[in-house]
Image (cartoon, rainbow, N blue to C red; front, side):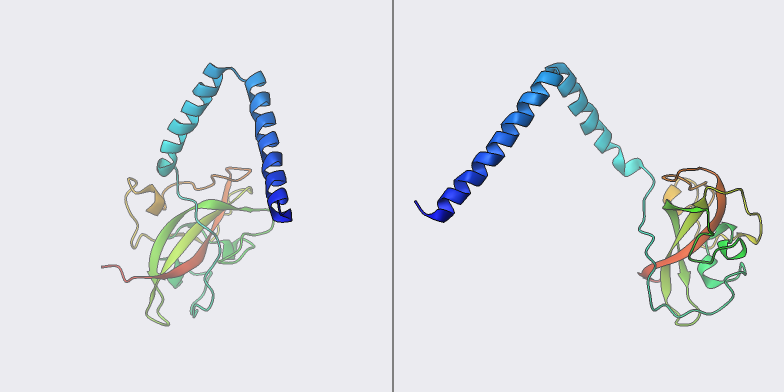
Amino acid sequence: MGMLDRLHRTLWAGIDAQVTRGTRTLAKTVSRRGFVGRLGVLLVGTGGLPLLPVTRDAAAATGVPEMGDPQSCDYWRYCAFGGSLCSCCGGSHTQCPPGAELSPVTWVGTCRNPVDGKHYLISYNDCCGKDFCGRCFCHRTEGDKPIYYPSKSNNILWCFGTQSHSYHCTVALVLSEAEAPG
């Protein structure tokens, strides 16, 4: 028997011993009914995942040509914006102010950039954890969907997944280029 075969058998023996130990420990601490019940809850719970709000990566696209004032409600990224601009509240149009936490759950819009004429998918992330800013409040609804499309509605407080549910302001992140709405 070669050295590789011995190594292979030793590796599998170690994995087998760990699985056996884990299974015996589980059998000692959880009854069969308890295990089946927890497994059932897990399976039913995963069926509900598509119903949860959409979590979007907050990474902004790079290389997008910019034009306009991020402290104005007419700025091109704000076509489906609803809230206070973080650029007027101590942050920027892409970053929360110090002390506020970026919500990972967002609503989205598709906005046309006047510089290059392309449409971009914009993620609107609420910044949470501080008192309401109230400055530079904007409410634009181009492309906004009714409340039965919650992932595309700006009429919901989106401070889910953060330490505090206290809304402060909102940023607008370019996610990617999008197809022109038709």
